[in-house]
Length: 124
Image (cartoon, rainbow, N blue to C red):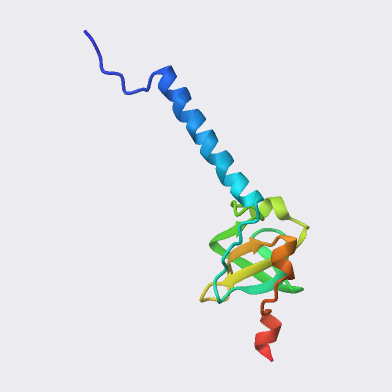
């Protein structure tokens, strides 16, 4: 009895894999060419240090990452907070409605050179 195969042939799998690797390489080269990331208008500038996740310090004050928070590296890929423990990073971030840190972007030197409001600026 002839059965239908739900699996792709080896040749088709390698073709799809090579196309995926090519697409990933093109995306990485676009980031390397200095693509400017657009940050939300509500994003603030800060210096973040990850302690014991989800606990962080933002500009020297205790803060907490929200459930489902996202940290994006300089290449705009997701970064796990556990891999950043003890590092001081210049970031842009957005707060969730409850005051927890929800979205974080680790900045490149060029992005960090651009002016952006800090949380301390809004308190005054």
